[in-house]
Length: 314
Image (tube, rainbow, N blue to C red):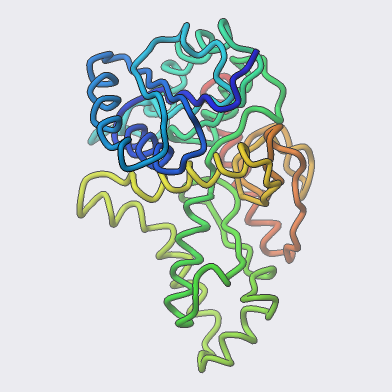
């Protein structure tokens, strides 16, 4: 029987350990097991995070192995290789698909009922790989997708307009990567169309502003990596947000990466579109309004991912 207060994190690198810390602070779970190829690393992270528990909610945090996943209701996979200098994106994809070919069957061997949340990159390809390798139903395998990209967009729009970013409603969709796109035609600030709100705040050069903001979102990770070598706090908070939607059965609409089934003409792969997320995982996709140009961009993003999938043989 699943323990719905138990979460497992596979991979204790920057993203995995930051996610574990954010989840500990959330108070959502009473038990967390950390699994890493380097067991000592998992032990160290569990100890370090656990020492802060007197300032948080009661929780059991420990390093374990795959047999400890048997009753975890949510399994978060952050494990994967980082791209090396001179290595192509396809080389990285193949390397991480091979890593998943080892990890995912070990998870499925001990637990067939959990929700699998994929955070490792390239997240869309690896979400599809996890779906195929696990045998889980599609609603219980999804990736963090463009949840962080969307948060970055809201943050930047909030700065641009000098308003609370939580009042901004807009999505980045498609690949979590260079072909991602902003669904500008459905963007709004508290129900007011974005262009109208921009003019209320004295901004009229909409096209130039949209291009700048979209480019800044796309390049955010590159900028952070250049300055501090890795990104992990933003994605850790994104993982926490997804966990909240699942554990509390919030039925929140989040742009997670999930199996597409024909909406906008996209199917047979995983990429990010808004989805209802609750205790059962993906409870439905939300077909937001896109204009013709945006539909074409989304299809182009999907085609890029399909080409990568073909190269990997998935």
